[in-house]
Length: 306
Image (cartoon, rainbow, N blue to C red; front, side, top):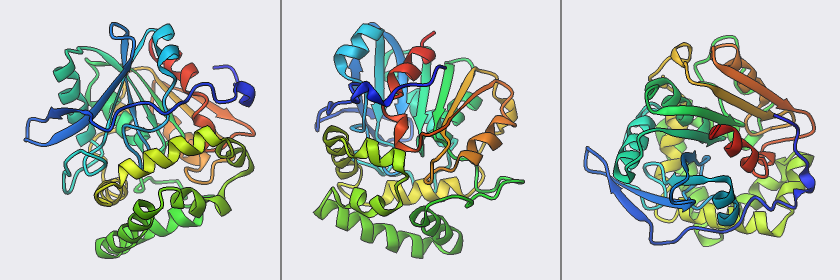
């Protein structure tokens, strides 16, 4: 994958999606809020959002999706937005939810792209759905917190470290902290960006400085936490325990992309994953950080539908 240019003016992203989503019922009776964009007859790609996040996160423009021949599918993970909570969920549980949505939409085979907190959930699809997942891309993803031979917190921003340390110490402490932050964000959806600002690497500052990107992120976080912090809490807890699948069993093509200056998901996480996924292609981008994954999405989608 060739290095991209930040001079794209972020033409890849816009505010899309409705506040009245399609609802898909899972086999265990939960509701998942789903958005489908792009070419109605295009190649299906699931885009799994970050932590926190929602189906309304940054996506390529509809016209661009149509030209690429992509049918892009997003949904709120359990506990986020308008999707029902799944208490005690594991990372592996994401694969069953992807299948529920795919079956409802009449999709047999599909690619999966996961960004940030969506990365582990995309890997669950790679490991557990080899007959349906054709290609899987992980952008600025995380390694398991139980990973051996990895200093999991090295190079990580303090706000992320505090969340995960609380998760290790006590669920009650984690829940209280994230509920407080979520209330602040519901009152002022731009609050999360403001909170992150002091920790942003310089490449991230350039991305987030774009007014369009900021508007998309604000809408994304507002929808993610519209009712509660449950999705955020459950994601954080899920990352800290066994994921429910082995990386060595992954056989589908996997792309791992990471900005070298990322402080929210340190690049060593991707290097650790690359050593353990037999089918992985790895791209480490110098001079890029966490939010640089956003303008990269069109190029990643082109790889995913090959």
